[in-house]
Length: 493
Image (cartoon, rainbow, N blue to C red; front, side):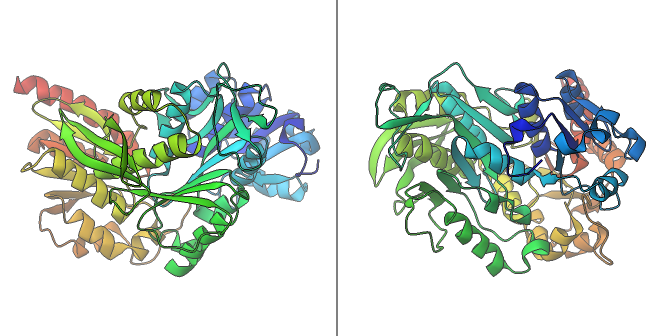
């Protein structure tokens, strides 16, 4: 089958790496539209088990014999989808290449899905998941039909794939789609479109496969230098992304990002300063919530209460509001309720234990700027408290490229517990180890840990505020830590 043809025309889908957060969202999409879904992943996880309950057939054997006969006998009509995490010596992948099977990357499939709707793509080194998940939540609250492919599990809906079909379709007026008047569904000048919300991932230049109607750029702090080579090339990729936005489409970009933007894109800046088009005024904490007033070009619009902590999350909220109020013209009263009821995404400043005695926060932070954001937010919420952090570096290349940044960020903790580097798709780089990174950290209160010794240190030292940080398999110790704190808290009573 020609890969340019409609992906709905395939008889079945097979995923190499079905358990990834992005891959599993696409698998859920195919399951929902009635396409048989099969796939491989390395080990069972809560996410793969959930997919199996939803109808997917998953094997944890990477050998050729584990490839279903229904797939081997119908290669031409099977959609094969590949994650970059799959090794090139994977037996099934090698066989499929020999058979000249058409194998698409996740980004290619997302690009094809998005073509049929009104695409809102959220790009940026940090904040993609929180912002895209919040946009999806606001659309849901405003009763707008949409499909969202999320890079994390929404805490409101407990899924990374969200679809609403019982609301109203967004009215894309004329060629520029600038209005979202849902009260005039019969307008002959409007075209009803289902909104597609997704993350525009910069890894492997995946976001260059998208042509969004609206886009957000949250940050351009250099990352993935194993792909891009230099910070300048990384920035250039985002400039190119703005040129992929539909003619007369829209862009929300963080106010401090001074890049050359495509000239035919309606652009708004957002942030905390008055120089931004969309700003958060009077940011303050009230009863543990971050509160602010949304303003447009210094004209105040409405007050908001955001349950997500941190000034960085206030900025994410302003970006989402800029899309939903500024471009889609959704009702401000409903947006106020939506911001207040948004619970965030799992592993994004997620409280896994919170009492008067102890606080444990789990976060996906895996870049120095992300570490700065969460550590700063925790210090704002819990001033004069001792903060302990368990951090698992993610990728040897990222650790090497940003070692000094990691060392500086981690030194802002009171106590640093450092785990081994999570390799993901990479092979070790000689000399690049957690011990090497630990020696660069200026704070003397630092040590290496593994999952077992981390639990032992928690039981003996009982940190009052503990941060669990990283994008690798550190999430596997979150529940044991939460359970241990229940025991510690009970003994404290």
